[in-house]
Image (cartoon, rainbow, N blue to C red; front, side, top):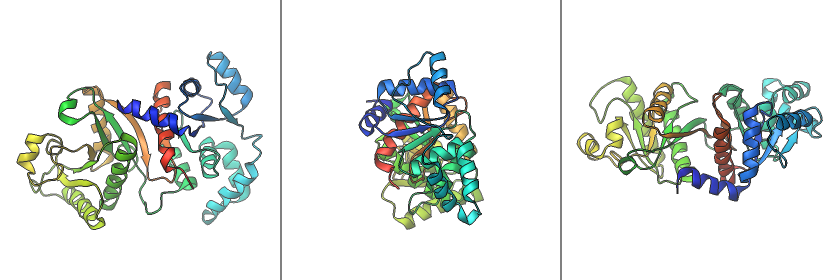
Length: 336
């Protein structure tokens, strides 16, 4: 079964409540109709019910069955504002400021729906910048116990050379941390390994990559990756990994045997951790465009409940897929 097939199957079982704050966007309403049709989640839209209904009619889609939360009439708004002010009290947020924030910022209201137990996850970003989605997630949802680093992965489903590399690879971090520290790289690797198991359904073999393999070059950038590997060893993580691997040594068996013969994952890695955001973002886009791979994500990791970010160039189909992934995540991750 394909990655997408597995995710859809998990989403059907999970039947999660997923917030889609951007009901003013045509793509979101078209996606909502498809989500309802396929029963991938129970969508929650934020906005004015009358306007949403008018827009859906204009687009000739049915959103019957979607729950709508209107900030102007939401019965629990004061309760939500009280909680948000409590969460942000150290930053000086008052009840009035919190209420204004929830009335005007749909991402924060969506995140609060998750925080307060009225939703299981959220998908946004079709019209909002990534920074706003992450800010809402971090300030409202918070990170998982013991997790300091919020990061992301893309699931890359290959359409070519699957016999050599497998059908699914995970790339991280591709959208959150521009220049991670060694500790952050170790956190990204740990979260990516968990995502590989829980969402992609694969046994993770993690490669922390750089431009050197086992001493072939000396540079502070290489030391950063080697230090991340040392941190993982100190933590005694329960997944296979290796550090200081070039991409070919990580992926190609014949190269791995020459460059890193003692490595536990060389030539067989399926989770690739890039040393910087630039490398990760460039890497996934090259594989997507030149090799025709399907790129699913970014899947945000480290939050205490699933909040995922869309590209502003996304299609309605992209939204459907990310909602299915978020619904599947919520099956095991949600719970404040």
